[in-house]
Image (cartoon, rainbow, N blue to C red):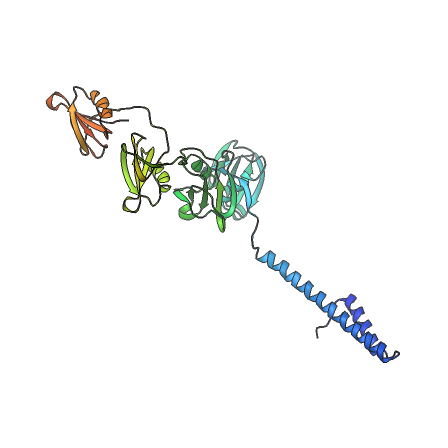
Length: 370
């Protein structure tokens, strides 16, 4: 039996002992008192057990939180400059921190617009109201806080798994907001310290999972959205390249990273292929093909490159007395997106499906046609 240390309980046990030891009552009365005493003992033991379980449960919740509330805060970026100290305008200082923590601390401190970090006391962020005067200091790193656009709020310690469309190396989580908000189709991101810091851009947020050090956010972005898909419709010209894509939704991010890509068509060819295009041109019905336009077609242009020859991808040739004449002739030819002009036969436009490789060649003039 465990000895009771609570003085209040001790008095109760003394009372029970008195009842049990007393002989000044009849047998029925004695039996009734014994039963009552036993019930009271059982009740007290149950109370003690409940108190123990409750304390254990509270300790478990403190030591092993099952679902902590995410910490939300507005994002900001802080491009740092090494070897520079911002003098004065101090608001407060925070010690035992890394330089990468200063941007977050500044963004969470009212009135903070800049900071200087030094190695003092295990690393100290000197938070400041503004940049002010500067001085050279090899041991200092400083930055001005740049607030990101509204609609981008950080979710600390959480990862948004899946739906990746691209990734961009950046050491500051705050910069991911601007990157995502200007990236066609990007609606969310997760930042991790992978490879010195990486923004994982995503088409949407489906779920969130705990991940130490990760920072995520949903972004308000309408730039170059791929939300208007045209089913069973093929954009039949303006091809500038093709690449594997398991689903037509993959093509949006691929097109954005592909130089000159403004639209695409996807087909199931070879397990899924994105056909990337410089513009949305002519269309035709084609079962199973899905197409979309990220950006409006560019205005007509035809910038001449003197003494340059586009050496491949010929689709035909037509007479042209001057290089300028080839621009309209290329536009009139289905599938023509570039040309090279030479003085062959008093002037010839060599029409091409794409620019391809180039070489220096005196007397030849070439251009990409939009």
